[in-house]
Image (cartoon, rainbow, N blue to C red):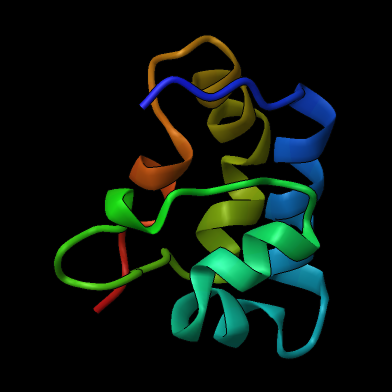
Length: 87
């Protein structure tokens, strides 16, 4: 899935996951809606088959710039971010 997302949008999404109460839960329960709220159009066909799993907030914070850079560089995709980590 080819999708252009600005670095600032990716960074803001990751920060929002960590800092905004309830946003992490919304992203897990309804990722298309949560991403739309962040300004990202996402095709639900690309959702991970096992559902959305996110790493702990502490891990997102510790690797915030690295995760942002990976998506910006095309080495990962938003759909990849939605399936990393988690129980």
